[in-house]
Length: 112
Length: 111
Image 1 (tube, rainbow over the protein chains, first blue to last red):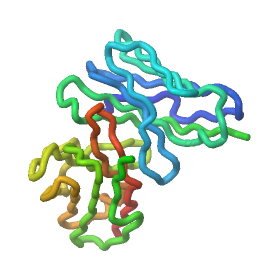
Image 2: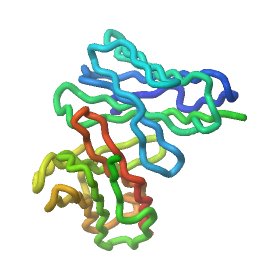
Image 3: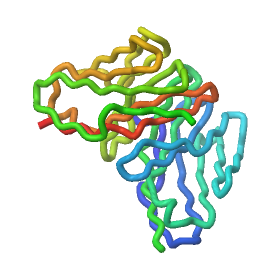
Image 4: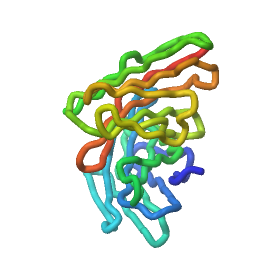
């Protein structure tokens, strides 16, 4: 079964609104990462948060991590049409930390 | 900038053919990965390599093999392609900070 599960599977909002995506996982992690994928393309790394961190910012992105609940959230503020993409969380496990385990993704649509 | 290139963006093959998917990186990264991506299943790890001539099975290695003769090149081989191997194939490398850089993907159709 998947280590990471994103919620919701799909999200549609108006341009300028904030978008929040959640990720839950099952086993202990070394780090958690978020990636973005435009339709039919490869994934692009957005942000990494380590297990001893609680919050991280990068531009309009804010990521939180709650290891006690085994969950993370990605917030995109002031969304733009260009943010339309699929977003994946990926967990780097404590053992075999070279590998990442990806969730199924959230499809985000920003309506102009 | 890290560059990860894949040999083809689109590929159409017939059942039973031997298929080679190639991935080349220009950043001297030791770890390289092959994933397949299917709707509703996300990315699943097929194989990865942590050094030249070293490989390790991922979650779904059946029907696939890999080759890493040079550090910059990691090949995925479908020994006898089947229709259930129709998928998007993504290659990635791992940086020292644990993030991964992905290639553009190869969309393989097996008829």
